[in-house]
Length: 240
Image 1 (cartoon, rainbow, N blue to C red):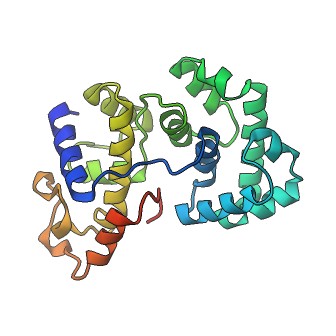
Image 2: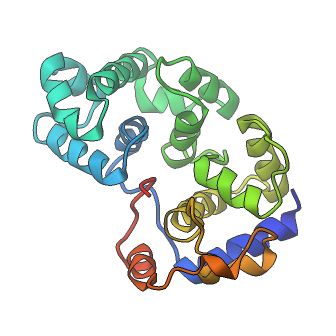
Image 3: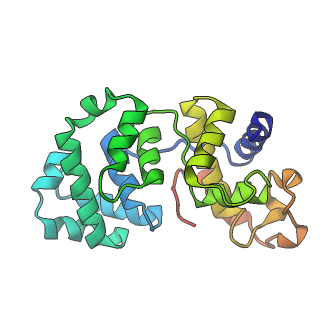
């Protein structure tokens, strides 16, 4: 990927949507739990689950592990697949405690920390990179379905490259910039939720003039509500 093209796209999205200020959380550990819970669900459901969990115990690994498994499952019910996510959250908390907690994990270099995360059952590359970028402030670019959709339509992801190829392409083109990576990823999600949807609204797209796939036929006749919500409702990751 070319740096100038990527930065031009970022600039247009930022001007269109404004700063996104991700990730919404009160602590780095909450970011980690949220990254696990947001798998295959809308962020609004994750917020409900986190609120229910906070009502039962403090958001710490030790407190979550001390919670009876059925009660943890009940707290996580709004996040969907809650039995599976209960097992994944408990597996992560156990690994987190065994790994020495935040300070010990933060002392690892990025490659070692990513390897550690990927070894935890239920954590794949996207979840691991969410945690690395937003909880540990590591310059790792998060690739999700919105990224693939947008940049494939822009003609910057020909073929079907794998996750790691896309991640490395962004990181190499943009250089190690944590703040840029956070903002860019958040903007891509806002673009994917409100404009570059499965049925795209190309007539509203801030990067349409850069996109070979853009079509004026995709204009939504009444998009203002969605766009205003994206600009003003605050950070709401991953729900479309």
